[in-house]
Length: 196
Image (cartoon, rainbow, N blue to C red; front, side, top):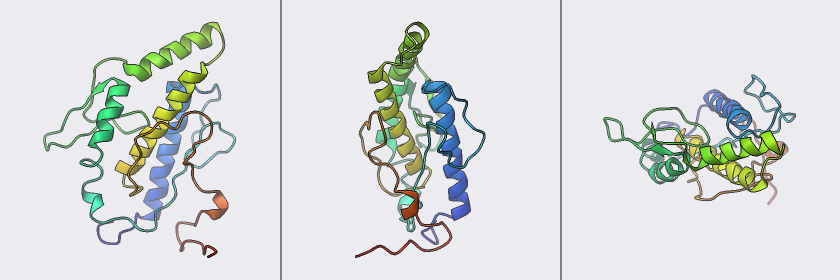
């Protein structure tokens, strides 16, 4: 990316697939969003109730590649760490790393407690157990936090240059969702021509 300003398409597809699969597993096991077991595949699956898609960037900033995954993401790390009940620690180089709602790997956050997200999932589990109903407000909040976390994941994994917004997009379809598949370019050619 530093040389060409482009994300290698095969690596982009693999990274997007891993995020998609991890989102399905999180939706099933952490959010308790459905009873349908997540499929073992990286490809999009319209039959599963949780899916993730990231539009391929045709040009990426060469300079941002060096700072966005650690320095520019620190404000997001801090806010998401508070919601997830984790502490933010820095590695030996002073870089912030960690896991937040929406993915990422366990690098430098220490567990403090269940956090707001853990408590809300516990309340949802109790409601599901006794009332067989997922409280709508809790589900909407969880979806908002997961969307936020996955946007941050896409940013710090260098998949996009757009800085993730500090907002909860709650419930229903993602209002900032991906373009329709017909409008999406393939990753080996050029973007499709758009009418003027």
